[in-house]
Length: 117
Image 1 (cartoon, rainbow, N blue to C red):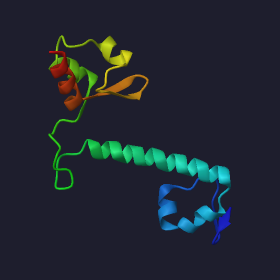
Image 2: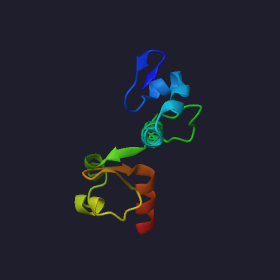
Image 3: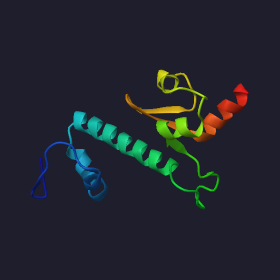
Image 4: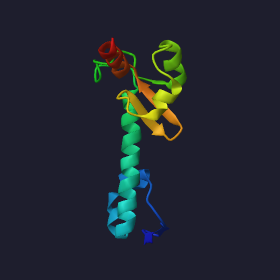
């Protein structure tokens, strides 16, 4: 596609959409759907990054503890669970980020441990 003498092919970048939103009108319907999926993924990444940020005036309720990796969780809470239990699923404080990576919500883990005691 050619707009203002510039050739665009494929999906528009987020930068292009922000600077020239009128360019979306020239995309095919399937490209708009793909752009929407990409924007949703970008929003999810931004939300995840924001959740891990330090407390500030916009986020005063943060405790400084957020999501930790599996090795850190096993070191901080020895004997509470195994690596297999964490990857097995069903635990409410485990957030799976990929098939081989999980993050542990520290506050959820503490609540879970309190209920089990």
